[in-house]
Length: 52
Image 1 (cartoon, rainbow, N blue to C red):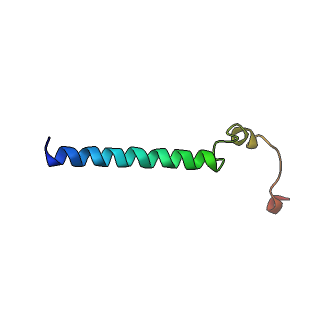
Image 2 (tube, rainbow, N blue to C red; image 1 turned 90 degrees about the vertical axis):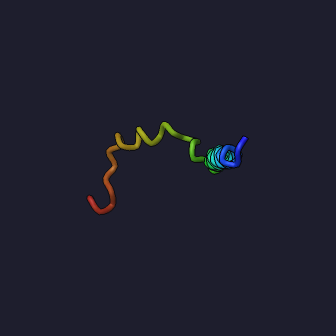
């Protein structure tokens, strides 16, 4: 294999590892804990403090 192929493999492994780390970090910090609440929040009829 040529040097360019080895470099491409290394870049692909780094990108895959980086994306895996970002997904692991987001799960650990609770980014995906309650994905259902966001779509129901827009249906609440609460007024903002400046709209009262």
